Amino acid sequence: MPESERAVFLCKTSFFGGLTPEVVEAVSARLKERRVAAGEILFEEGDDGKSMYVVRSGELIVQRRASDGTQVRLLMMRPGDHFGVTSLIEMEPRPFSCRAERDSLLYELTNMDLYSIYKSDAKVYTLLLQNINRELCRRLRKAAKRIATLEDLLHAQGHPHSD
Image (tube, rainbow, N blue to C red; front, side, top):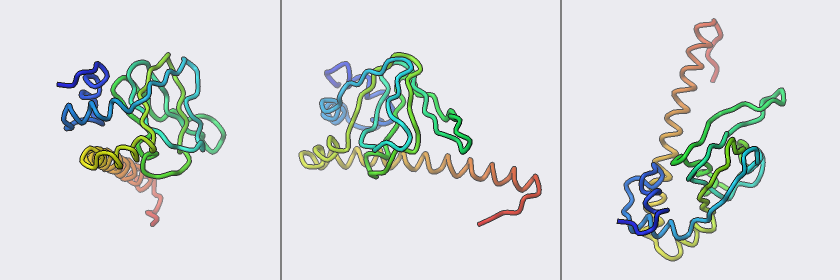
């Protein structure tokens, strides 16, 4: 059983699902707490992405800028949710912005934290990568379903399929 309150919470999240309490405890020790006040921007679309976050408390809105300049709300993040995981793998600008809807407490894992885990404990690193890969596969599957739905709608409206 994990010892810290933080690790107990993390064991219940999907990002840490299936990991042993010892592994969660080891990773938990590296996480930094990040407080974000209601209305505050955590990061902007286009910012360098070097961290992923697990929401401990509060609510955050993930949004992106539409071609007309308006903000399009994509997701609401609540306790136990995580986001920014691709930033641990690819060093690309953030594809969306994130703003706190309510005062929020986040646990942050940076790409340097992940690298440090790689250098110190290959087994923990491998288990984390397996969970990251599972999450990316879930998201890819979800995106493929959304694309198929949009293609069906276009087809129903008489628009030809394009490759």
